[in-house]
Length: 266
Image 1 (tube, rainbow, N blue to C red):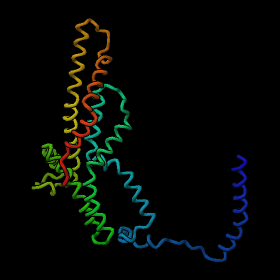
Image 2 (tube, rainbow, N blue to C red):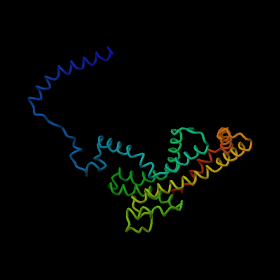
Image 3 (cartoon, helix red, strand yellow):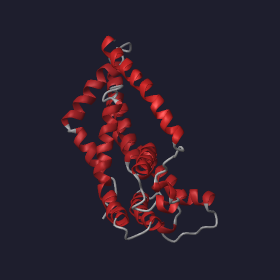
Image 4 (cartoon, rainbow, N blue to C red):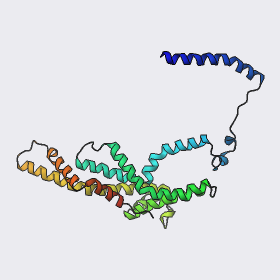
């Protein structure tokens, strides 16, 4: 504490000595408030490539970071992956193993592997031309949204869930009759994509759950036949489920099946 107090006292003394001189100087000359020139240009200059000052870049970065979880869940394959991994853990009956942090990290890496072509095309067609002053902000937004829109439409069409698009269209845009997915507004395409991902994830989870459910039923029937009704079947079935999962290299099969369930983006 003494080491910290001594520098603080020195700082306060220096400020007290300097404050009269500063006050005298300020009394002799009128006070001036320097406003950065970047803030005087208006919204047009703020959003231009050369007008993004460091302060605005930090503000935009914080905004993107705060919206990143919602964007990640709504426009990528993260929902399907995380739901399937959660159902797999329930089917194994291992309670909180693997922990949520491990499943989330695995889901993020799978999402990164699947979404890399989409994000690369968005970067090449939208961000690079915008930073090179070749296109405007509106055009950059349209080009950046096109690959993500195409990815979502491919997954909806692959899973035969196009009815979900019409479900949200009749509420958001009842007079709209789009001929292709490019004409579907994002207000209908985004929730339709999430609903399609949830349906597909539960179908995959059911297929994963079924073999482990059969093991539970067999173990329960054997225990009842032996008169060991007081012994919980989970104590016997869980080692067999873990053994089966390890012998068939379950993690490799599950992750491979998840990645193959998505329509390839070309």
